[in-house]
Image (cartoon, rainbow, N blue to C red; front, side):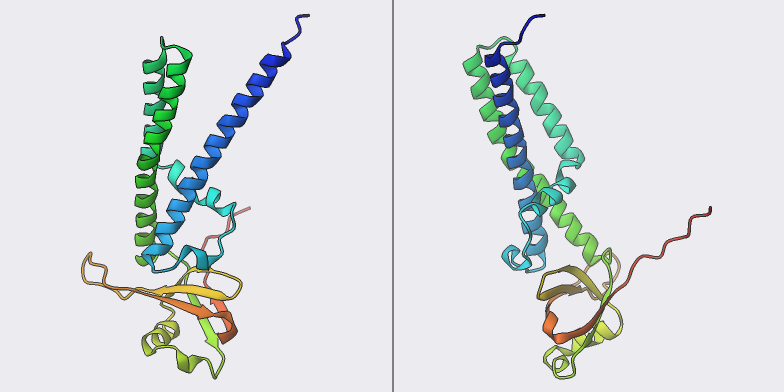
Length: 206
């Protein structure tokens, strides 16, 4: 039986490690960009929502499954193959580096567009409804329009942290127009009870 060269195994592991590292960098970049522009749309700083490091990889899913991202990746692979089919190894490395650099602004644009679309969906009502029961001394510090929206179950939750709720109130518009909306930062210490409405689903028959 022919034994594999240890040097070849080492090279394969090195290539695999580099590929995984590059993919991880892109996934993190896409997830961070998506999250930044999503929360920025509502006037929320990304630092204030306490997103764990690994969550940016979760956010990247919305971007990498976008049809434009898939087409871009396939096109980049085809271009790289066509350009480097008969090129020496050093030109292949430069071509790969150039393609990876060019992909950054393309993916940035896709991530921002996906974030803007998701923000629009949330403002159109595609987010869970939340209502609060406040402590007696705390409710007086909140504006009247917020209290009315809370009483009418018109608040939508964006996210929550260990000490804050971030919610939006989007007044209805005329036709297809979406008027100005409002983002509210609610301290958990002001809240006695928070109720989040779940979607209505039908029971599965046995």
